[in-house]
Amino acid sequence: MNKKLGCVLSILLAITLTISVNGEDPYLFHEWKVTYGTLSPLGVPQKVILINGQFPGPRINGTSNNNVVVNVFNQLDEPLLLTWSGIQQRKNSWQEGTLGNNCPIPPGANFTYRFQVKDQIGSYYYYPTTSTHRAAGGYGGISVLSRALIPVPFETPEADHMVLAGDWYTKSHVELKRMLDSGRALGRPTGVLINGKSGKGDGKDEPMFTVIAGKTYRFRFCNVGMKDSINVRMQGHTMKLVEIEGSHTVQNVYESIDIHLGQCFSVLVTANQEPKDYYLVVSTRFTKDSHVATATIRYANGKGPASPELPKAPEGWAWSLNQFRSFRWNLTASAARPNPQGSYHYGQINITRTIKLVTSAGQVDGKLRYALNGVSHVDTATPIKLAEYYGAGDKVFKYNLIKDEYEPNPGQDKITVAPNVVNATYRNYVEIVIENHGKTVQSWHLSGHSFFAVGIEPGRWAPERRKNYNLLDAVSRNTIQVYPKSFAVIMTTLDNAGLWNLRSNSLERNYLGHQLYFSVLSPNKSIKDEYNMPDNDLLCGIVKDMPKPTPYKAN
Image (cartoon, rainbow, N blue to C red; front, side, top):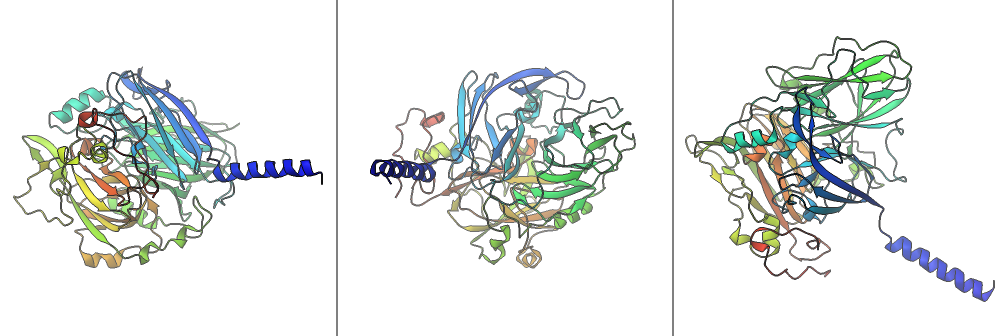
């Protein structure tokens, strides 16, 4: 070989190796303008939050490990934050988008979110966390596909559809906020939306989805509502469940599926019926008067309208509990990495800490509040995360106002209104029990982590209930429902340093105190465990004029 040519080839090889070793994962860039617009989702004109003129907002389509950059221009007349529900923000709670983590984007300003969907696949969504903005829209879907080399336990579908469904109020978000601030409950929603539309179900609606006979389609359902659980079903078709919030599931077939607030499910539907129109039906659950919405699914070249006879929803929550128990983790399927999900034996890990949270409601100064272990969370002018980072936490909040064990005594149910922050130990394996003593179904989300939903049972929790846990193939996910007079148990490793929100997915409950924050601090203060505050992070409250702390280093 020519000596000069050999030298050139060596240089090229070295460059190639450098790129493959040091090259970053692909980037997805988005620029969003958030505005108000007037729409009539339920037939009544109202002010809706649009993103780039769309309601729902643009879908983020990505692949595992993609870097996502979203430049958000707030053209509303109020401060704004968006959260990316279910995206774990590994080492990066700076991008979480809650009022405990971030200063809101002022009107007329912009902020760029930068995060990686590290080692994640699945179905998620984003929405506003400020004020009652989510009651005006501003939400959209997030889908994260597996990398090309990672096997997926089903054939690639003909198309992949996002279905954002949930209850909706025709009252403005300003009016709803006024109600909550005055201490009143919001009452029943007005109706149900499917991708921003209600559907008349009279055979005259334009099709929302078109299918080809014999083909199989993926539908990603997320309950983006504010108050009610929903049930989804497809006229004349069954649904094969394949994924829940980033985990491949055992592929059971269902005629209908309950989806509680904040939850996302993926199903496969094969177009194997007579070619004509059919209805996708979404209805509220556990309510005296159920709201129903439809969307038309049309077979290409099909003839004939959908039948006006809609499939009925199940009744009662015992059915729903039994369905929950049928959801199982697919132990042999790979998720974001090329190893079986079941290789992680979560049931064999010793529990480091048990936290029992009892939910309650009561009056404080004549106004409705919701509490966890007697404390009703209130947001602070200085975000908790910033106060911690600047060493000013003692001026903003106190740790551990609640205890790990809580037994309310009759007549002693006083509620304290304060920031609810729990100091948690990095990498502890925790068992969290949520007890619902109320009469309605609750739904809870933990940010920054996925957890194993090991059990839901009627009654009160006690240590002997552990014998009933599913310690083999509970689905790893980020939301859990708690039925009336029942409890739910989740297990997770707090291996993501940062500040993470455990919150009710109900707008009313969340706004009036049903949430807390886990402060998971790495003792090393190293960027190996947690990233530094971004240079573009917005500052507010008492830290606005404070000198910037010494950044973490890789030690």
